[in-house]
Amino acid sequence: MSEFEEAVLAVLRSLAKGEIVTYGEVAELAGYPGRARAVGRILAISPDDLPWWRVVGAGGVLRSPDPALQAQLLDEESRIERLKRRPGSPPPAERQDPQAG
Image (cartoon, rainbow, N blue to C red; front, side, top):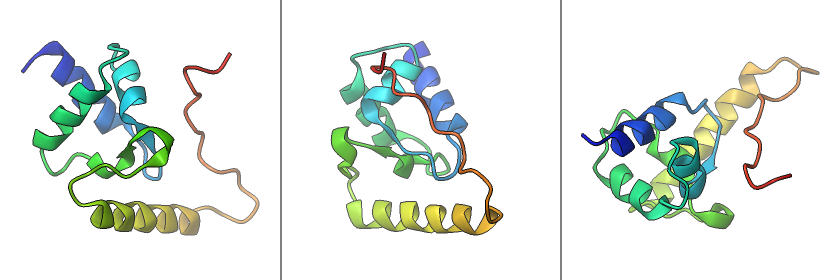
């Protein structure tokens, strides 16, 4: 396995329930900006226990081979996370947009 593949898988493992990132953000977080398409190829062959459904296309487009399943898994996770939060508690921290200044 290449360093790039290992870095991408490490980013996937670090994603919290309910956290959604784009292929480009995964590439950047892995230290390889501009390799969004390569992230998609890695996700296509990654182990099923990795949270592939948390990675979406630019603009939030569901790009997995089974977008209906991806939407269902994202919805279920979101619902579970909302139930876990106590009333008045802040939502989980979100990743900062690497493009934001």
